[in-house]
Image 1: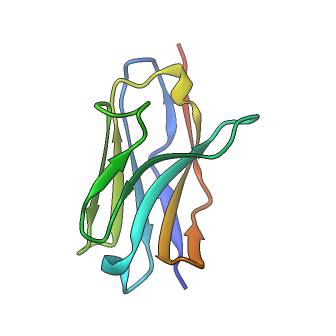
Image 2: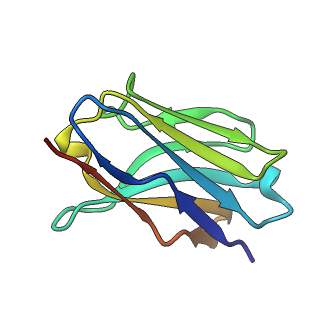
Length: 116
């Protein structure tokens, strides 16, 4: 069983920055593929960024160059550094962990609002 706890959401102005953090309870954190998803009401769930157990990151085209995902296996933590935020980045952001094809865990989400 894996429990995920997100933090770092909030209200920022366009062009501002936020850092989202997700702490996992799993002792096998180093074996997990971690990711951040986001959902805006009326839109599909979107993969924002992911990072493999081998520390290889991937990003949605919409956030490339602005967001950076990283992980610290000694702290069971995955971080999403978000820079140059845009109003369209407004969403609930969810931490995700995948241990196997049929074993996926979700955090409760943290709200990010980008508005002037």
